Structure formats: structure tokens, C-alpha cells
Image 1 (cartoon, one colour):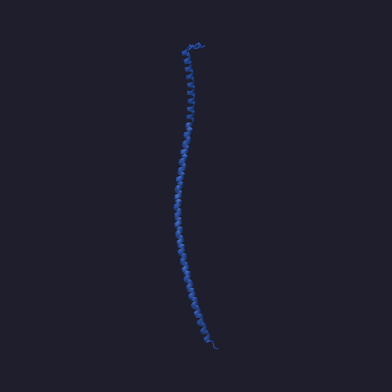
Image 2 (cartoon, one colour):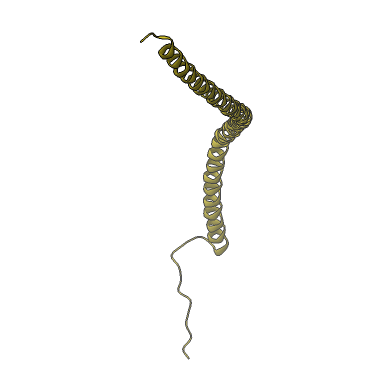
Length: 139
């Protein structure tokens, strides 16, 4: 094997100075990154109140809508009770009307029977009257 000599560098700085210069450059880059991260964090904090307000508004809207639906359910329940009440009253009215009409039908039937009996009696009286009148006429 041949002996390789490390190439001589043109730099006049020592090895330690070059390492420290690299560390300084690396430190500068890290500081730049810290600054950028800080700016990003600040943007995050800038939007945080907006999100909190939005979430609060969403919560209020949800509560308002929920209360509206609860009131609507209550009103629907009352309406259902009213419909049931009206339905029972209509059923009773229908039954009363049917009973009343049946009474009227019975009364008309009784009247018809009385009129029929009266007419029959009237015919009998008329026929007897004709007989009497025909016997009493002088011929």
C-alpha cells in the first residue's frame, strides 16, 4: 500500500477554528428555525380565539335549536291531546246523532201507522155513511 498523505488545505485557519465556524453556522440555522417556529406558533395562537368563538357560537346554536325542538315537541304533544279530545267529542256526537235519527225514524213509523189506521177508519165510516144515505133516499 502506498502511503497517502493528507492533502494540505489552503486555509489558514486551524482545525478548531473551522469546526467552531461550522458550529456557528449550525447555530445560526437553528436560530433561524426557532424564529420560524415561533412565528408559526404565534399564527396558531392568533387563530385560537377565532376557533374558540366559532365553537362557542356552534354550542349556542345547538342549545337554541335543541330548545326550539323541545318546545315544538311540547306543542305537538298538546296538539295530539286536543286532537284526541276532538275525536272523542265527534264520536259522541256521531253516536248521539245516530240515536236521535233512530228516534225520528221510529216516530215517523208510528205516525204512518196512525195515519193508516185513521184512513182505514175513515173509509169504514164513509162506506157506512153511503149505505145509510142510500137507504134514506126516497125512490
